[in-house]
Every structure is written in structure tokens, then in C-alpha cells.
Amino acid sequence: MIKGVGIDVVEVARVKKIVARGDSFAKKVLTPNEFAQYKKMQGKRKVEYLGGRFSLKESFSKAMGTGLGKEVGLQDVETLWNDVGHPVMTSTKFSGKIFPSISHDNHEIVTLVVLEEE
Figure 1 (cartoon, rainbow, N blue to C red):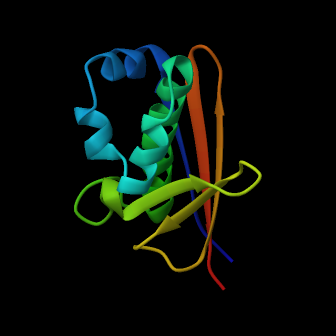
Figure 2 (figure 1 turned 60 degrees about the vertical axis):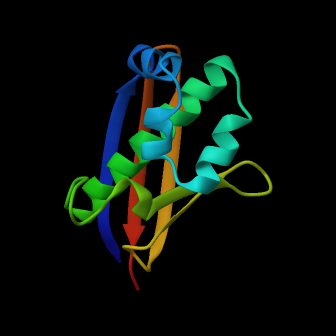
């Protein structure tokens, strides 16, 4: 049974400016495992990764019906790649199945998260 669906959009140009300022925002948003992946990236890919992970966390919190804040924090949600490069999302706040999707172009990053309970 579907518990929730969340969607979010982030502007690439906004994230590019944040990345240019250094790692402080990334350290706040990303879990240690996500940050390790982020540090291996350069240029456009780094911007897409940070913006995408932030947007996925927003989408997850919307699917939970809470938004980011007291009930769902940035460190409560993690999205890493599996062996074939697909995003796999886990959370300390939800025990069911999580289906993340992410897409980006030169202007926007769009994410969708579907939560499923038995």
C-alpha cells in the first residue's frame, strides 16, 4: 500500500553557487556516506549530486507528510548508488520500501519519492 508520494524541484544555478562557496552546505545536508561520494566528484556532476540529494530528502519528507524539520531531518535520509548505479534510499524514519527517482538537465533537478508499506 502506498503511504505517500513526494516531489521536489531544485534550480541547478542555485546549487552551483552553493558548491562554489565550499563544503559547509554539503556537510550539513549529506550523510557521511553521501559526502564521501560527493567529494570524489568534480564540476557539473558535483552540483547535480548535491542538488539531487537535497531534493530527494525534500521529496522524502513530503511523502512522509511532514516536510523537513523536527520529524524528518537531513541526516535521517540517505541515498547511495547500488552496483549498477541506481539510487537506493534508506531512512531511520521509515521501515517500508522507498522508491526514489531523480532527473536533471542544465536548469533543474527533479526528484520523486514513493513510500510503500505492507
